[in-house]
Amino acid sequence: EKSCDDEDFKEGSVEQELFQSYDSVIQRVQLNLEAAAGDFRLNDTAPPDKLLTFMKKGNIGNYSMTSEDDSTVRIINLKIEDSKVKFRNQGMRVELGLNPKPIGDFDFDIGAASIDFDLSSYNVGKLSIDGGASSIDMKLGDMSELTEVDINAGASSINISIPESVGAELKTETVLSSRNFEGFKKIGDGLFR
Image 1 (cartoon, one colour):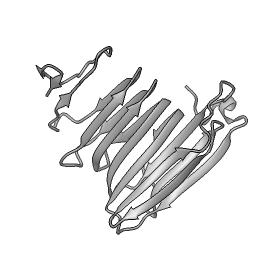
Image 2 (cartoon, one colour):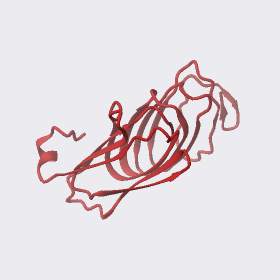
Image 3 (cartoon, helix red, strand yellow):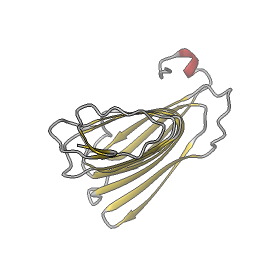
């Protein structure tokens, strides 16, 4: 696993920083993230004057950030500009910071990436993951009355943790994937509570 402190990772790496300023009018954020390849982490939080911070180290390609507001909702799109991932690429590490005040809806399109997000301090409305050959670790909290999670993944390792105090229902449609839902009881075909 590469780290921002590894010498081979630093060599030839490019830094990129993007951000969205905080606006108290914004009550909900829809973050659409394209994670083609690399290591994506969520650091504690964004500074109070920022809605989102993005820092990238590595040479896979730069990201573009676009946003639009729809009344009290800000839609943020983070996409890789050059998605030509080649074997000589050294890797990429991305650290995101989020402001905990607005409700967060997350749509992640993940290729061959590693995602490690602790969202337990955030009010998550929706979490949608479309994953390829990825490793996904997510931790959800109890800040929201209802969180909808939709996962469509191929050859992925997915670990999602939720507090025991939160009621949850899982519906699965897996064919060739193994599944282990610790703390859940099988109710029916593909249904766990």
